[in-house]
Image 1 (cartoon, one colour):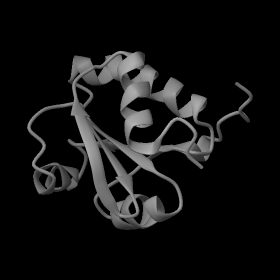
Image 2 (cartoon, helix red, strand yellow):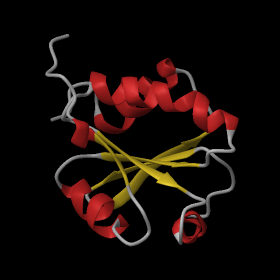
Image 3 (cartoon, helix red, strand yellow):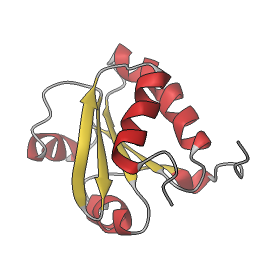
Image 4 (cartoon, one colour):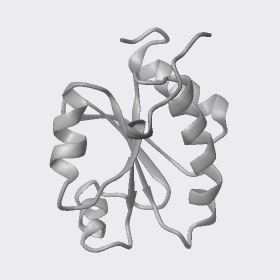
Length: 123
């Protein structure tokens, strides 16, 4: 599979204040996974490199927004989306939630999740 290298802009941090612009509005251009995580959460730390690998495989066609739930007002977003545990990863396309999963899933699950929602040859 020939992909361009992923850009540093494909994985980025978001917070409550810029979430609408960087995730909801931006998802009209490119599908965005939102990783709601915490530094005390071992499954969050386990899934992070797998999410990075997934984004690299989809270079430029899928982005990852990392939302640390313990920072500032970010927990309000976790409440707004009725997140029950961490990590929770939510896929946004065209400003709407398209799917979500919880826990430290294997890369094969992550690939299947993305393919199910975007198709194997999206954009």
